[in-house]
Image: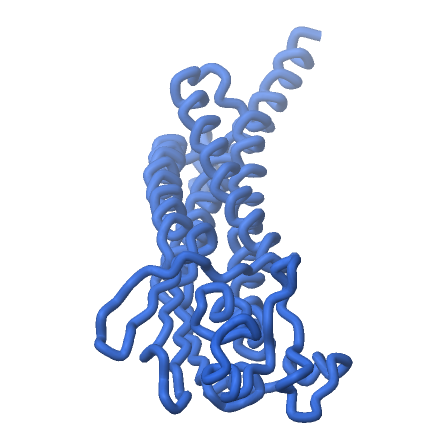
Length: 296
């Protein structure tokens, strides 16, 4: 009888070796990635460098050089540079209260909180190694997936808000100038009012049309205000007296994108370890069934 040298006798049913050590290293690397992502998200949410707004005074005579509004998801400040080039902080800030902006802030905050929860779950599983089963790791994966999704949605909504302010932000910015006294109203001197102000503040602090100085524009034509603008410059007050410039997304936006990408890498690292645990659980079940069959 001839012996077949092609397959060794001890390797007729070779069992694939699972890279347990490497998958565990990748799993712990995800902790470092997750921590970096959380720190970047906190930095991005706490700084006012999402985008900047500049309003330049083109009146004759001008009252100020420009107004600078650094905008962040959770911080907005307003600064004015006077004609003497002195800078000061204004009392009233720009109000962005529409649903899109509120959802962008909420989604970003939810993404940060779920990332923190995922980190806590990871630390608990690292401490209690016996409970590091595939179902527990799945919980961490779900939280990471929520963090990635929420940050991405928040970024998309914030970018849409930038475009909206550029195209339709005249009323809110005019209200900002009126609230800080950079636009004259009916109650001010005749010399200032003779220049023609088309807006004023009512008793409820709402911006309305000035019927005395609208040059034939009726209050029902308020939709005209929202349609004023061009690719580079928006005019405030329908008079061409102001120029509005918006910067493209700045460092806070880029940091949030980086944090979201790092969350995604952490998610993939945990997913690799999760697949390894599932394979191990399946192998253990097969071994138990084989043992039961042999005993039977």
